[in-house]
Length: 397
Ligand SMILES: CC(C)=CCC/C(C)=C/CC/C(C)=C/COP(=O)(O)OP(=O)(O)O
Ligand SMILES: [Zn+2]
Image: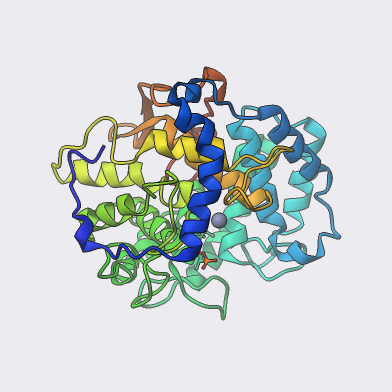
């Protein structure tokens, strides 16, 4: 799997905690029938009906009153709408209209979107709202974004050192850089005024391990590493960081036993890292190829082990996907487990003429029956590639 890029196990701590052994035990029972007869993996299937029903029930509840997630309402729209989109389910028109109306109420007159109506505009729900509207893709949806105020607001989030704060007066971290730059790219707002100096901050967040922390000098974590790498990709600046050590660190986060990824060294496997770590591979492969390195067409990720973990251990029987077997499903994990599975199923190669990722040899890597194949997702924006293309065309008019 890693034949083109070796890493030395001794470079990484190998201590195994008791909790880690417990997780291995639980997964072992889920893997048991397949360990007895590995050919059974041919029949493993994604329980589409249950997941679609779970997501549709969520759409019915997208209204005020979701108190504990009141600041995450734009995210709930993104997680559910993107999950359905990966599963190839079109939103009923009534739901699209309701989501467009809901998100338009989160749009601040001073630029950007809050997590709910009347809330302070914030880089993270702004990414979520703008990308949800791009998935819906109608003129009505794409039109509700005020690009002018949003651009001026993004400039106010930008700091002299090239970082971004998550909201005016808020904290800096690489999530803000990613959400600001991905939103700007989709909306055709990537100007030198916005992008100059941004990679200088991101570069400082790479740690001795190879992954990135949220800010300089903190522990490397998959969530932040994805944000930093995708932001650097948007800036065309992956060559300013140590891509090889990031690739080794990311590859080493795939758990030998479970096949899923951990978020950081010595922590537990979790289904959401299927995307935060897994989504980095197409970007890493693009960056490595850009420096003349040979990358096997099968890539650097263990595609089959990841799908084994997702399909055997992350599906909740009554619908929805989750962190690990003993957990309950939620919309966030449903979204990122499916997104990571989609990355593992398809081969993404950067087309330097069209300036977009393209899928080649589609479906060659999917585990189980063809019914398991999800739509490809763009590895930078994490929305379907066809939806991204149309939205970007719209905002270029
Ligand atoms: C675009 C965007 C909003 C990206 C978010 C990226 C992301 C998932 C960041 C993770 C943040 C974090 C410190 C998790 C650790 O949680 P933990 O200690 O509970 O988990 P762990 O044990 O797996 O590290
Ligand atoms: Zn998780």
